[in-house]
Length: 193
Image 1: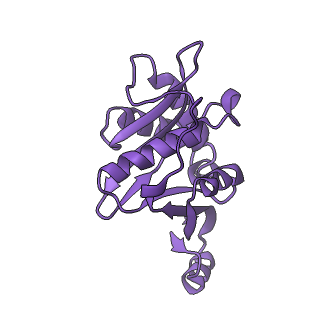
Image 2: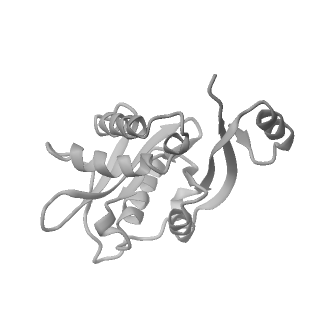
C-alpha cells in the first residue's frame, strides 16, 4: 500500500514485479454538521434480526467483488466473497464494528442497505456501505452513512472517514454530496511469491 504521491516507492515496487490491485480513495468530514434525514425517509435501525445475516452477506459479497481481492487473478473470487461474508458476520456480532445501521424493505422486512462503523483513537471509520441492487438510487445507503457518522460523533470522534475504490464513482459522488471531502488516495499492489 502506497500513498499516491510516493512515486519512487511505487516505481520500485512495480519494477520488482508487484501489480496494481486497487486504488482507494478516503474521504473525511467533521460530523457535527451532518445534513438532516428527510422527514419521509425510511427508518434506519441497528437491530440485526435472526435471518438478516444472509441478506447482509449478499450485499457484502457484492462489495467484495469490487475489491482488490476480486481483481487479483491469484486470489480466488470465491475466497473474496467468503472473506466479506466473515466480515459481515463479525460486524453484525459487533466484533469488528461498533454498530451496524440498516434499512429494511417495507414489504418484506429484509435488509436492503447498511453501513458499519468503528471508533479509533482520534477518528471514526465507516468501512462497509452497501445497497441491494434492486434498491439502489433511493438514497438508502446515505441514510445509513449519516446515522453511522452521527453515532461516531456522539461517541466523541472529531472526524469521520469513509473509503471506496476509485472506480466507484457513484459512491464517491454520494459521499461528496454528504459533505465528505477527499483526504488521501492509496495505491494497493499485490505480488505472489
